[in-house]
Amino acid sequence: MADITNQSLNEIIENVKTKKVSSTELTKAYVKNIESAKKLNAFVTTTFDQALDKAKQFDNKPNFDQLLPGIPLAVKDLFCTENTKTTAGSNILNNFIPSYESTVTKNLWDHGSFLLGKLNCDEFAMGSSNETSHYGNVINPVGDQLVPGGSSGGSSSALAADLTPATIGTDTGGSIRQPASFTGTVGLKPTYGLCSRWGIVAFASSLDQAGPMTKTIQDCAIMLEAMSGFDKKDSTSINKKEEQYSKNLKDNIKGLKIGIPKEYRVDNMPKEVDELWEKGKKILKDLGAQLIDISLPHTKYALPTYYIVAPAEASSNLARYDGVRYGYRSKQGKDLIEMYEKTRSEGFGDEVKRRILIGTYVLSSGYYDAYYLKAQKVRQLIKKDFDDSFKKIDAILTPSTPSSAFKIGEKTNDPVSMYLNDIFTVPVNLAGLPALSMPAGVDNKGHPLGLQLIGKALDEQKILNIGYAFEKNCCFRNKIKKWWS
Image 1 (tube, rainbow, N blue to C red):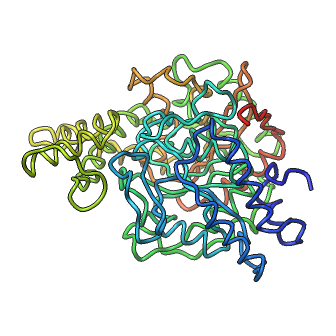
Image 2: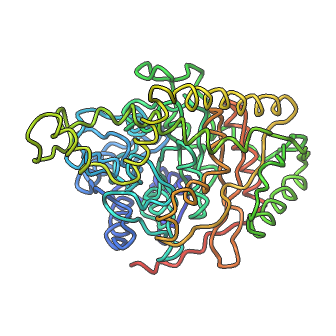
């Protein structure tokens, strides 16, 4: 049959179920693609032999009742995978092999999937371009000079280049949605607590959330259904009835009220992003949705609030990497304290060190009240803005990012410019809400642009339905030429 790796996850599942392709044939096709795409630098670790063994086991004893029957998947290298190296893109974890499996990946394997390999990411998920990884830059398949977004850049690159049928990332301030927008793919940041954080290398514990990255909205619903669920090992996990997101997907959005926040029109926003937003509004209106202007007045404080809260939590979470219990240990140092210092200095990259220093500063005596406590108060105001708006609307439509993918190296010497990439995505993490980035068009260079749908807490089904209706009427096609093979 034609190249099966071009197809959506849903189509691939149907082909496996109807025996048009075996799990072994499917896995071999992805292995071939991965081996010819080394220029993209999307993979940190591959598990081909293990994957082919699992595929053969499935073919010998298939179970077509599973959500992901015999489907090979690559995952972000922030998810701990039992007996398989997990680095979080950092030198300090370059020899770490977990003896346990993250809950989210275990859920995927329990639904019939298995591991193809681990995908490159910004170090400890700190970055918006996948340029902070110890293992080098990931390249965007859209163009050989472009970043794929971050921190889930390896995930977005591998997905767009047909190296995995779907994948998972983590989103602390936009790390699923921004790379999805940059590569013309779909990315969902679920409600905080819907997907377990157990076994995910921590960045900022009150913000981190795992989510699916896929080619279509239907695929996104399938993956969310497979990976979500209550986990008693995660104290922040939400104990609720499991949803059948893929079976309940519908494209009738007539009568739904969509909020348009005036604060998301920022200074110097490219004309194409504004035009795309207008196009999105028209599509939803034509589908019978009602557009309502809303205000989220504290949005302007979201970025500074995020860059106080996230580094504060990071400085605390990353204190565990000391060279004593696991991970990298420096051979330098005449005593224990010097060994700690050398290990952390050599093990962490510049961006991680920068955020640890910021976090340590805002938590220090004399500054805790002035910065950290104040940021937590502003965070509550940001959440209240959303809560108040959702009393009169069903969802919110905004751009996903203030631009399309930028060039490698363009923003590396200007951290503030890099941080501004998250301007449309961080408010959602601070409020703990679900948000979906969906491909909606291209700029004048032909680079993909996305639109974001924000929903009420635990209202993933509604934003998936709106996205499903939008996708059918937007007619976006990701035209990527395989220049790398």
